Length: 419
Ligand code: AMP
Ligand code: MG
Image (cartoon, rainbow, N blue to C red):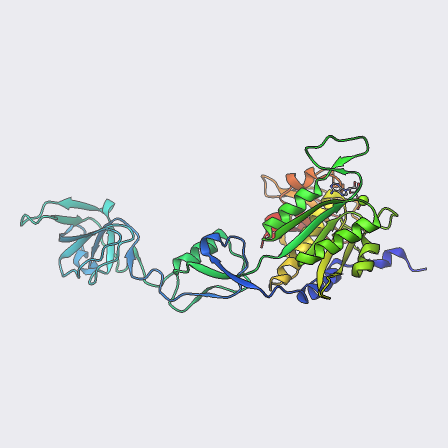
């Protein structure tokens, strides 16, 4: 008899397998959307600038533009010959002249420095000129307070790359080079259903033996945060025929079918036989905690194509963690990106973990006021409070004892949820 423990698959092997499977289901459709509506979308093409940003040298201060050589000693008095607010274009300035200038305005030809107004005194003009004169009470260096043309972006530069997810700041960068629209991947269409006869929806009374369906909310939110269109099929009863029917229905209009529960080996667990009948299945006991059982495969469609399938364990924390570690990378690969996990940060543990599991563990932690990681006291896979209290996971190798002060691998939830 094989040692049942040897049947556990290392998470990295599973991730490699998922990435290979997802690569066969890459979404090819692209669409052009308004940059203002592109939050969270994945770019299908590079965004290349056709201009310098900023387009011209401009001042980063309110003050006076001048020739530094004209103010080589403190107290130099220069004639103010023009006033340049942001948006206006000035005239060349000559020797002994200064331009009153405001933040964001182009520096006029001839000027090579800006002196901030706090270091100047406005004077009436000796010759009665309308704009007066200015006394410069500092010695400017050439170039000071000037933002150079193209210092942010050069004409022709790629500012955003295909495969990149658009953050708010990436939307701003696209807009700064004048891109009103961007080409993005079609959103993945994901069907979601929960299995379990004990499940009741919030809003309905809770009969004896029942619990509220929380995974539906957690997984739906995670899918939305990952930029997916969610087709919510609700709760599917713990029956083989119902599970098979749900799979067939879900496969029709979706790229991926995601379920929670019913993936163990109990006789009430119908995901595996249903998937076997409706498509193809791979099933692992993943050497990770929480989240051991995982089902992956395909569901055939009427036209002989197939939807990807991913079945997560039912325990709420297991569902949450396996989504972050396994489904999120799968969705990235489907959209042309990289699989795998984000880079773990080395952090000091502020806790002891004297009895580690044989499996690789993902502990719910948060960064404490002393920058050490605090551990949520109850690490049970049913305690969803830990996932809200925490701001990250410690990725702890199998059998690794942790003592306070040890360096551990910290994965911020923010990096796992949307990258
Ligand atoms: P299962 O994987 O179906 O054996 O479920 C494992 C545990 O997770 C059981 O205690 C279930 O009651 C619980 N569970 C399954 N699905 C959900 C769900 N959608 N929301 C909350 N708990 C669930
Ligand atoms: Mg169940």
